Image (cartoon, rainbow over all chains, first blue to last red; front, side, top):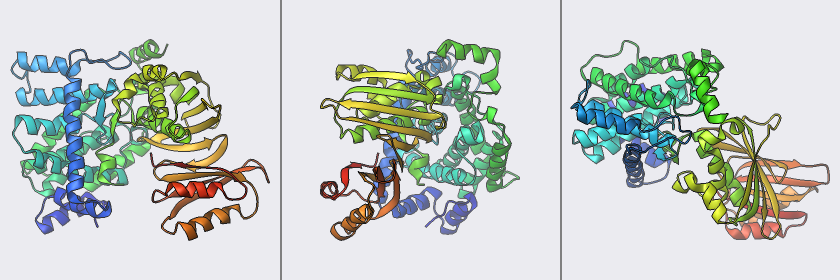
Amino acid sequence: MLKYESIRSLTEAAEAKGVKISELVLADQAESMEMSEQELYDRMADSFRVMQESVKEGQKKDQRSTSGLTGGEGWHMNQYAEATNGGLCGPFMTRAIARALAVAGCNASMGRIVAAPTAGSCGILPGCLISLFEDRGFSEHDIVMSMFTAGAFGMVIAANASIAGAQGGCQAECGSASGMAAAALVEVMGGTPTQCGDACAIAIVNQLGLVCDPVAGLVEIPCIKRNVSGLMIAFSSADLALAGIAPKIPVDECIDAMRDVGNVLPAALKETAGGGLAATPTGLKLQEQVFG
Amino acid sequence: MNVFDIIGPVMIGPSSSHTAGAVRIGRVANKLMDDRTPRTVEITLSGSFAQTYRGHGTDKALLAGIMGYHSYAEEIRDALEIAKARGIDYTFVKKDIPGAHPNTAVIRFVLEDGTEGSVQGASVGGGNIRVDLVNGMKVDFNGDYHTMLVMHLDRPGVIASVTSLMRYEYADLNISNFHLSREARGGNAIMTIEIDTLPPDSLIEDIRKLEYVTNALLIRKL
């Protein structure tokens, strides 16, 4: 049985056996959950379909959040991507950005989403994976399998640091999601297990210290846009790892650093809406607008 | 923890604590009502729930749970309208409960036959909950297991009679957690018994027949 105590133990076990991390994880989880591999795979495939539906829902022109503070971001980004043939980042990335916005927007409007690892960071993994599936032609099987790698990395992060904004700030939510997504991207692209760990490390490092400061305490501002930065960092980290540019600090030490940074973050910057953007004059005005 | 705790749950947004967790608190009340439709429901929101419930849809989530919907049901969005259509007379009260967890809700219900009941629960993060009070008595469970609540009079030997019954008549059942609380010595008491596997309905019937037991309920895993 795998222990999910370190990323290194996962990557080394996969390298030693010459298999993908996801294959190890699927077999292990089937054993510990006393279910067949096929049952677990089907359940994950269902989650992938929910993610695709979230994208569709969140890309509607009239998508509005329950509070009324946000809405339509996914639709706007798609319009821009089409009108400009991909804007600055190119068609692939602008479409990926639109997907992350759409899923985060779907969440804000009480739509159905898959927490990955949380509701606040739910746009990053689907934004990355659905883009590989729809725009790069990777098989659904490879994509769904990579979600087991992402999940396993999240388990290690949850065990050694945190995936809750209230405990570790936004680095724990969007940072973790980005690290998980980066690992999954590398696996789908045919990278080695070690490169999966490298990509995760780089993504976490790039969001270290990110605070959780939601305006009015709602999962909207800045959460929706931070799903975009998390997605961009996941892609760039995966590319760095695949290019062979390894992180200088090993992934497990990066996760420990994230925990230590989270521990010294003041409570005002951990989902209490007491600091950061939430405490700005405009943030307070928006709060007043929603709750009176 | 398993991989679906990370990639999951599938839920209606926007917040695992303020929406998905709220549905689960509502579902405890639904189980307590045996999935019947209440005539009236009064929901007290405390702390962060009171301050931000509208933006997070916490009110809709609680009502949806009370009506038996899961945290992934799209009906949550229309829960207020659905409750009205079912003839449920609901009210929301904002009131701080001293000493309670910041995300706490109290659900009081009255059924058509006049039966009253209440649940106080807290959403403690990631969609997980903790149930603190049932019908005014202290309990301790989170809905991750099948939970049996045994209301009884505080008399010597009642716990032994319940656990012996389980041991000798239902040998497959394993208790994973046990909690007892009472109002006063010799007064009303309640056992919270979490069980690894779903017990047959006959267990509840048999426990209800035991001396000094006033009622027993099974709250299935949420």
